[in-house]
Amino acid sequence: MGQNLKTRLKRRRRSQYLKRKNEQAKANAAIKKAAPKDEKPAKKAAKKAAKKATKKAATKKVAKKAAAKKVAKKAAPKKEAAAKTPEVKTEDTGAETKEGE
Image (cartoon, rainbow, N blue to C red; front, top):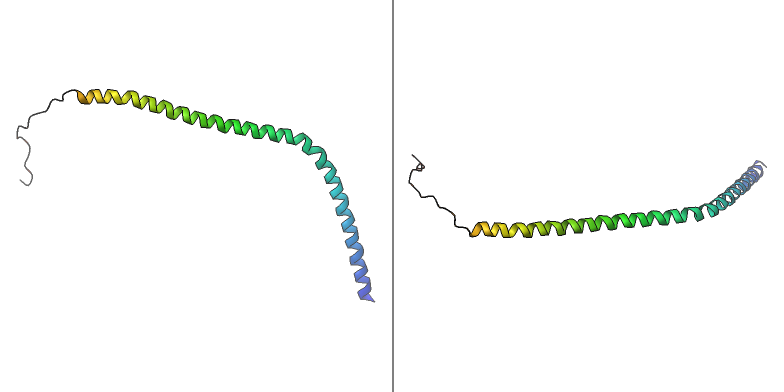
């Protein structure tokens, strides 16, 4: 007889648990249905803002690279002009120290 009592208790407790669970789920579903409508535009706006920020960062990087290339191009002709000018060579007087002595 004890076995029967245990199974009945278990079944009753299980059914009560399932009722509570279903009621909680229904309450949460009602809350979730109302909330996402307000959150979706905010999420979309956040995504757009993030996209714009990444685009700005990318364009800034491109602009920096372009500016660096321009500076390098301007510097290159100056270096070439300096290289074209004749360099004065110093004569070797033979006053260098001999290695090994």
